[in-house]
Image 1 (cartoon, rainbow, N blue to C red):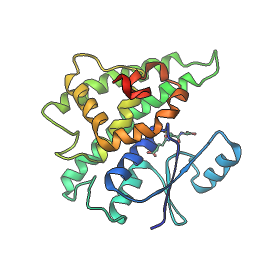
Image 2: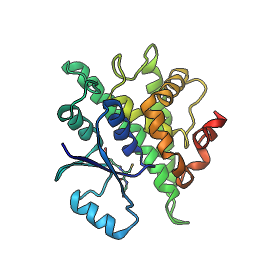
Image 3: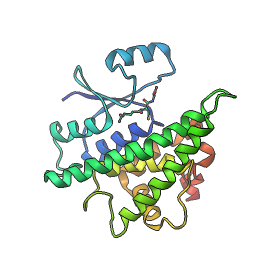
Image 4: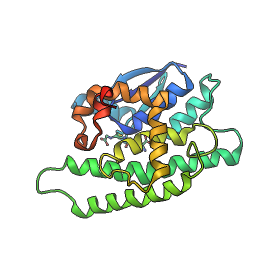
Amino acid sequence: MDLTLHYHPLSSYCHKVLIAIDVLGIEVKKRLLNLGDPEERASHLALWPTGKMPLLVDGHRPVPESSIMIEYLQRHAKSDRTLIPDAPDAALEVRLWDRLFDLHVMTPMQALTADLLRPEGQHDAHGVAKAREGLSSTYAFIDRHLEGRTWVAGEAFSMADCAAAPALFYAVTYVPLSPQHVHLAAYFERLMDHPSVASTIDHARPYFKFYPGRSGLSRRFFDPATA
Ligand SMILES: N[C@@H](CCC(=O)N[C@@H](CS)C(=O)NCC(=O)O)C(=O)O
């Protein structure tokens, strides 16, 4: 395999795949993408027409979509670690929670980032309120699910936790966890302490000053000495 991950250190979906790569211990070259550069954007669009990142390329074969990339790596790269269990029902549970984090935490979180990037006078107050409400009700739902659990799907750290870590990391900068969500708050800390999550955040640290929602980001993520 000749794997290259096209990524940006601030991108939440890139974090999801970087965490998975680290857990699986797979050798992957990394290519930092600057989609603000028209030439880079054009060549990225030629590789994958949605223009989204991350994009995994195996030789000349583009492997898009973060969850598909993780499944691809799980199937084709040699690793003694697993992020998607073999047992069909357990695998479905992992895929379900992966979807829930992507659709119900990543999506509203991205909408809130996108709103910060809109020009003055073109903000979407309705969309922002909806995204914030969506995050609050999803937090409550996940909190209930997490009671008595260490990881979100099954006994082991899985693809669903790879999705959860960056989704929650950025979402709480907009809608902080409320004190009654004790299970979610404890899970958040377990995720942040996981070595593959911690090292992914560590690599992103120099870029956090460019994150549009940085005013909500805890000091400890800028400077670990304040933790
Ligand atoms: N469903 C995609 C979502 C990827 C995505 O939304 N990536 C964002 C960065 S986190 C992106 O490419 N944004 C740049 C753009 O939309 O131009 C996946 O799972 O990989």
